[in-house]
Image (tube, rainbow, N blue to C red; front, side, top):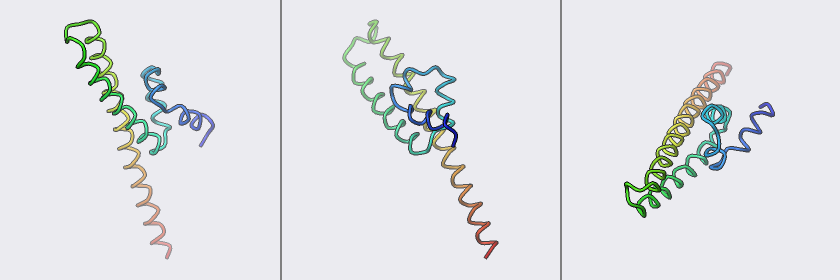
Amino acid sequence: MDPGEEQGQAHLSLGWARDSEEGEFERGLEGASLESLDSLSRELDAEQERLQRLYGEFPEASEQGRFIKCQIREVAGQSGSVKTSAMVRRTQDDAKRTDEHARDTESE
């Protein structure tokens, strides 16, 4: 793992996700460990729930309500990206383990 990946993983947090531009966010997900992706996914899910509760406290047509609705959409999109990245990482890890097992079996 190169230092850039380690640094990217260290910054994988709700604050990082909310402050990152889309390209930086996606690059961070690509270099993240499965554990980091799962942790960020849980944080984004909790944030989405918090925003949904908050949204219920304002009239739908209010400026605050519209702002929170926009934030919910953004967090939901990020959450989907994180979940997709985790799914891909799991598939890659499973394929890698299967390949390693096949090589181990062949060499016996």
